[in-house]
View 1 (cartoon, helix red, strand yellow):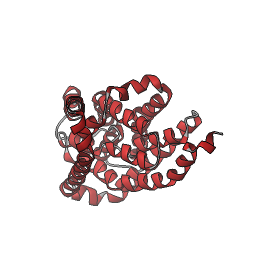
View 2 (tube, rainbow, N blue to C red):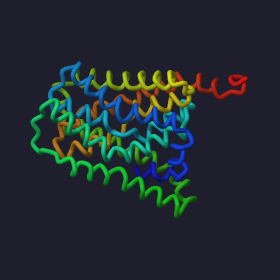
View 3 (cartoon, helix red, strand yellow):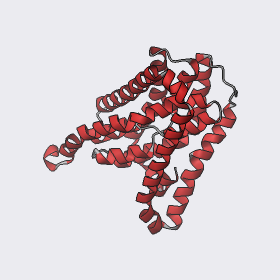
Length: 274
């Protein structure tokens, strides 16, 4: 989140008013469609209650900064991607505890710690908005330094994500092993459905391919560390779906980036607009 803040300026938030259609469609997909698809995937694959709640928690998590990198690699609308990541990270203070509470009630999960919505909201605020604001403040005070260290900060952030995923898999290896088939199936179904639906909704709304690419990437590459951090404070088993999802989301998103690279390049060429 600090890394994301290093890349942000107030102009990224003003883009909501400059390009309201793209931002609105992207955020509706990310903040509403994705959690609902997670409910559906959990039901379809018959996940145990705690794992089902964990999948919804992952589906409700904001887009990750890696989505911005992959959008750039696919020649998508990187500015739109950054804006959606920033705004969804702030909205997560409301959406994550909301869908977490709904999932616990719906699936009837018996958890060792009964989470309080206010407490979850405060935790999400501390792990999203606070570091995001810190990164933006650093960029404002020391712009040149922020621009210089941002590429290295992204590498560090990715390394931390890998460590968090590995630690979670190690901690919950029994739960993941016992339910590996269902978890992989549900996570993969959520990933592919979210990317496919969001891309096609964007195209039906007459957004161009680069914008649709950015939206699909946001739906495919979630901030798994947010889901894992929230889950760890309730019951570590809730983190299992996020860990499994994060193990392959870069593969599917990477393949999608490769597929869209030439198509988006064609859209951006002068000949495409003649």
